Amino acid sequence: MTLNDSPVDTADIGIVDITPENIADYGVCGYKDLKKHRELRRKIDWFEEYYRKGLRIKALVSKEHGYQGMVEYIPGRYAHRPVDADGYMFIHCIFVGFRNEFKGKGYASSMIDECIREAKEAGMHGVAVVVRDGPFMAGRTLFVRKGFVAADTADPDFELLVLKFNPDTKDPRFRDMKEHLREYRDGLFVIRSVQCPYTEKNTNAILESARSKFNLRATLIDLEGPDAVQNAPCAFGTFCIVHNGEVISHHPISNTRFENIMKKRIR
Image 1: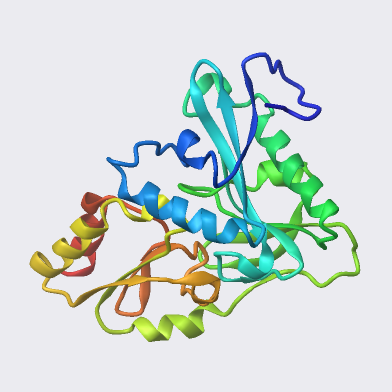
Image 2: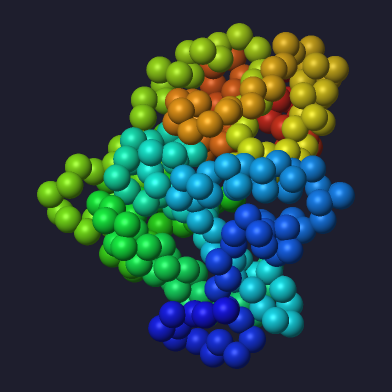
């Protein structure tokens, strides 16, 4: 385990390269029990498919406390977000700290450095990431400190940030999500991708509530592959809930939260 040029004490913790051979040992996104979590099995299968295409996960692992964070990135042509980012390395997600003592210690910065290094070694244009201040996404502050700048924005408050190695290269951009939102005008749609394992939890309960409590025609749409996700109707890409052509959740939520939203919409 290594933390390249880390500003913190690394006696207990380091960055591990996750591979198809060891992912079941370390788990991902906090999931480790294959028997208990079907979403972990789906995530592992997805990881193995895209690992061959350049997908990488770096896990932050403590010898004493185990899995404490990760960064996941992939060549932009395979990005599971509604972006045009071909030629860039694209960060899907990054987080640190199931335990508070690992937060604010520079670990996330070190993991981003790993991504930047690999993007340069691969001869890419730079690194891109979608950020938002809120659940399930990294905020912009960390990336701005690393030199990232805004390349594009999307409703309601998403930003596409980029760190370019060559200032003359074309910026990455969000795709036209409003165009694809028109496909979901009638009824309730839960749209998800296996890229994010948290999209599995609560989905069945939300669909059941939509049908039984709100008398809605509810449809589950599993987005298969990057082309489908890049044409998703919301900037999170791998999960959203759409009701009658309007995005009512941009990230995974509980069934209780869903019901509260619908009670305000259907009176």
